[in-house]
Amino acid sequence: MRASDRAYAALRGDIVEWRLPPGSVLAEVEQSERLGVSRTPLREALARLTAEGLTAAQRGRGVVVTDISMDHVRELFELRATLECRAVELASVRGDREVFRQLHRELSGAPGLLTNADPSRAAYYELVGRLDAAIDAAIGNSYLAQALKSLRVHLVRVRRLSQDNPGRLLEAAREHATIAHAIARGNAAVASAATTVHLDNSLDHLLSTNTN
Amino acid sequence: MRASDRAYAALRGDIVEWRLPPGSVLAEVEQSERLGVSRTPLREALARLTAEGLTAAQRGRGVVVTDISMDHVRELFELRATLECRAVELASVRGDREVFRQLHRELSGAPGLLTNADPSRAAYYELVGRLDAAIDAAIGNSYLAQALKSLRVHLVRVRRLSQDNPGRLLEAAREHATIAHAIARGNAAVASAATTVHLDNSLDHLLSTNTN
DNA sequence: GCACCGGTCTTTGTATACACTTGATCACAG
DNA sequence: CTGTGATCAAGTGTATACAAAGACCGGTGC
Image 1 (spheres, chains in turn red, brown, orange, green):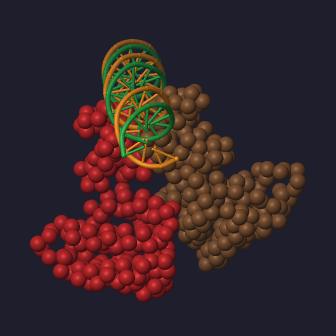
Image 2 (cartoon, chains in turn blue, purple, orange, red):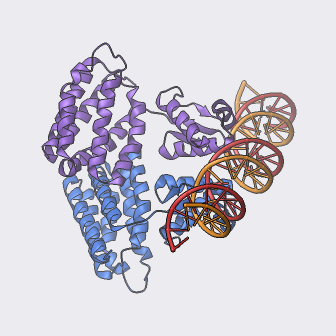
Image 3 (cartoon, protein in one colour):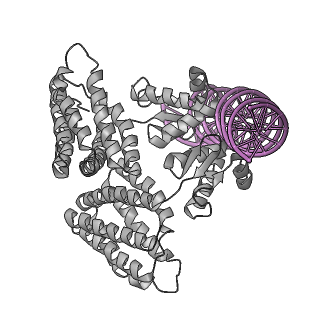
């Protein structure tokens, strides 16, 4: 694996996990020493992060981790609704129905995953990730898939803002099951509507648990 | 201006203007000598182009200019319809109506711009660019604006595929005028519908004049 | 004649040195 | 005491040297 890839993965992980919170200044020499790579591959990693919007170049002061305000979250969800609604519509038309039938079955059993035995909800988030991946594969449009992928980078970071309580997660799981069910039936209109409802609920929950 | 910015601008221009057609291999030493910069800033430029999707890194063989097939164009227009329909909807709600009234007036006079005196259609494309910029400013969503911006890079390249005839350009100008008019009236549904029609016509024209 | 293997050579990936821009701090003048 | 200017330091931007990895080509064996 290339050093620039390692640096990129490490920095991106640190940013989305909030180990490098918004506003952190990423000095080149400092980070290159911390990650054990030279400045050249580190700069390449920083350029990729900046292109994705996770960092921004401040002239003369290096790059800083971009801020995430509630206004940004609202904008992010506006784009998310646009892209994901179209994605589920296309998936409803083009997707392999059996795949989504299976995902619907698994999502219906999601309450069993949300026990206290797994406080990090790893199994639940893995299942949701599989739904996202199935939609990506079903839409058959690399440009749309790419747009969704770059969007999700920011969403992972936002997730940390949401103090997920079990009640909301159960609700979200039901909403995901509804979406999978609609896609499995090939009902694009319902899939899109269910996605709109799901995202509105998610944003509402996010805004209600964050005062700023 | 930084050398990496110059290299990026030069390469991107060469690619979208088809001076570097799809499939061109961009060797680092060759391009750095051609553009008069060192390999380090050139690599930065190539990384940015690759992040945008204009080039792709072929392991061991350097980066090549990405191909644009008709399937890619179809996918591109699918994403374009998704983003631009939402953009004009938001612009209808949030935009400054006077701005779009003025653009509508200018677009209504577009036939006057499409005379034989200006075979490159520079004045016409400048006007359409102003409409795009006005929509970008009106949507008030930096993430959506960014997605549109990265999309338009590819669209400029595709434009070269379209052997624009005066008849189609006149039709397109009328469609743009309709969109601007709908936004000026704050009618989101009509603006979205007009955009859908316009993009379908554009894609249809593109596909009919390109057999491959 | 075809496929496989090894060597060479081109090309990318990384490190480091150097120059230049920029931001800060301190001193001096008003 | 405040504002402005100069000097200094820190950090980015660029160039180049070196290392490593993959591709191309010739040769040989089957």
